[in-house]
Each structure stands twice: as C-alpha cells, then as structure tokens.
Length: 273
Image (cartoon, rainbow, N blue to C red; front, side, top):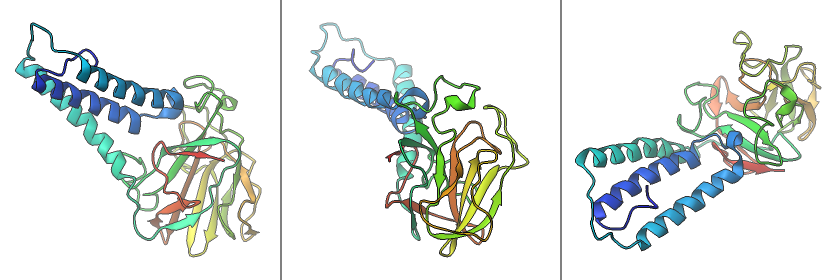
C-alpha cells in the first residue's frame, strides 16, 4: 500500500504510512524471528525504507482519489494497535535498577532471545514475581532459523537441543533435578514447570537454568562450580513448547534483573559466541 501511494494528498499518505509503520514495527520487534529466519527481518526493514522513499518520489496522479473516512479510520487503528505493542517491546529495552552481571550460559554459535526484557509485550514471564526478567533462548542454525522445519516433532531438528549449558558465574550448586523426560514439541509437563534444571547461588542471588535434557545434568547439590563449567545440555523437559534454555535470577523469591556479559537482552536480541 505504501509503495503504491503517492505523496499527495498528504492526509492519505500519512494514514497509509501510519498503518505500514505500525505493522512493520510489530513485525520487526515482536515477531518470533527464530521461526521465520533472521535474514528476513533485516530484509523487511530494507523493503519498508525503500517503499517509503519510492512513495515520496512518486508524482501525484492526475485524478486523485481520496480515502473514505472508514479507510482512514481503519488504517490509523491498524497502525496504532500494532504500533503500541511494538513500543511496548521497545520499552522492554529499559534496564531496571539493581542489575547483576552474569556470563552468557551458552557457547559456540548464534542465539536469539524468544522472551526477555522488562515489559509484558517483550517478555511472557513478566507477570511472574520470581521470573519477571527471565530469558528464553534458542539457537539459530546456518539459515538463521531455530529449527529445520517450521515446527518439527523431532527434537534433534532444533538447533539448541543438546547444546552445552555452562555456569554463568562462580558459585555453589543449590539444587538439581534430572531424569524428567524430554517432551515432544507441542506437549508440556505442567506438573514440573522447570523440568530438569540447576540452581546456582551466584553471590547473593540464585540463578535458575531450566528445561535441560534428560540425564544431562553434570553437577550435584553443594558442589562448587566455576564460570564456564558444564552444567548440562539444553533439552525440552518441563512446561515447555519446544527445546530452549530458560534462565532467570531471583533473590528470596523476587526477580532480579540480569545482564549477560554486560548486555541487557530482550526479545529478538541476538548473541553470537
């Protein structure tokens, strides 16, 4: 719509731009780009800029047809509704006070944050007192996608499945759970939300690394661990829809915001190791 719209009449161009900007903003900041391929995200931005430039350069038609009032309202509402959610994700980039810095707990490859940030549009965990700033992380394959296939049943088709999870700090292991089965994607174990997991006391906070693979936990309670030490393998155990690593920090049951190697990670943040 934007590419075909001439710059005049101005009112029609502005309403079309609002609609396009809202939808593109939602797509760029909110859409799960691990599903669709990270390169497509950047292509979408380029196409939006190109469409804006071309529309501004397009001369007005000799016979100008004005948008109906209903079309104007629909376009504005479309842009505002999608744009508000995108802005909510952008606000998730605001780093709360009291941050602790940890090391990123995965190695070897490119990773994307599925859920993360300080607002509910950016982070599905935002409503939970202990997990308000939690991250869900998946790995990207060579095509910039999290899996071979859109939503495959086979766990080994997900790039993160079986990836080594390492300690984000020097600390003491407080709790471990191992032996729970890896779920078939699309099913979940609601009775064991964290699945197989490790809890490490890092300074005065507890860091939870969850959804680990069955039988992969490599540490025991009360053991001292060093930053970068193997804890287990990423899996699909617990209350999960597909293989990923869940990590959050808490202090006495209250969520603690955490940066990783100095970065505040939010929805669609990419980490390359």
